Length: 497
Ligand code: BES
Ligand code: MN
Ligand code: ZN
Image (tube, rainbow, N blue to C red; front, top):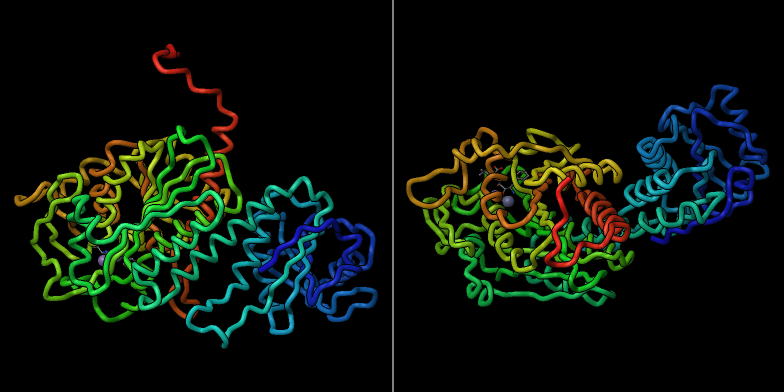
């Protein structure tokens, strides 16, 4: 999809070309001159148009208007959240095979976040999965022109939004692929092809190298599968080599049957989405290649299938993780933490400024937070604050959950350093406490995206979350490090205030 930013506003909306035009109308609407403005004023006066968010009026071949189809849509105060909802509703009204190009007009001078919201909403509402359904569903909308009166004022927000869309769509497409079209080896190929973009490098480790590293926990999960595991290492360099990177770790279970602790059949197909964390890491790197921010980022993806088999790991088996800690695998369906813990240990070698893992980790998190907010766990308050703020700004929200040591009591066992499951109580938190043991050497955060990474039911499909949150966070870090005073050189200590 091709997004363009163009210099026009409500006064010259009538002469804009396109198969359809969406005009966003706020409660505070003021006539601006021109045919479309007059049309809005008239419709409002007659009561045929409401400015309530998402309420729309479809106008066809209005005299003096170039676009044949015009959708006037209310958006309350014009806040980003409302713009997003309104734009999505308007696209639903005009969406048809005949609408290939869209023009978008704001009936007020929009702030940057409103422009970002419109781009995200239109991309989201027009995305069509294609990998295994290439011809039946072709994406109709291929061109979107967004009009603003001051292009320079919102250019950076627009660029950010378009990059985020590229990242989100890559994440969606890989996440939506069935497991036979998204094996660990195929994910590795996708990562390798990202490395053709500027600033990105990729290295892929196979079973032999992973064994040599001592990733006994990761290998245990993979044992029941005919598909070989892959450990994917992506790097983005946008700053000096000396600058500590942020490490993103994405859970890449390409299918989760539960293993010997097998899952029930109902909705098991949805466990093809158990690599949404990995897909989000790929998506973030796609966006980084577009935006080239001044930061360093490492992406780690431990990827394998979780299958039952004669060779599969059994409940009660004890394995040794890369960290040296032994783990009693009481439930083979709690496999995400088993692949993530070895990736966390691997992350130490980068001496990271922060490590963030992203995982469809627990059904318990879905019960706790539903599909609205991702679960956020963090060992450092500033990291938690920054991620929370990034989620709010990106309309990809998360909510902080606790990490009290008392929750770790449930993971005690007589047979290893730690068990891989506690009881049912606080399941999302005990999973995070398991990971916490492997994240002692750096500031760490964990995003449990089990509820937010995909939707079930008739709208079944990946959401691309939390690519927008992560991208917002990384861009904010880049902005911070650009404006921050240089670190005092080695050996000098600042006096504490
Ligand atoms: N991939 C699942 C988590 C999941 C389940 C996400 C349902 C979304 C919907 C994970 O590997 C898993 O199976 N977790 C278990 C952990 C339990 C055995 C402690 C779960 O949540 O049931
Ligand atoms: Mn599982
Ligand atoms: Zn899983």
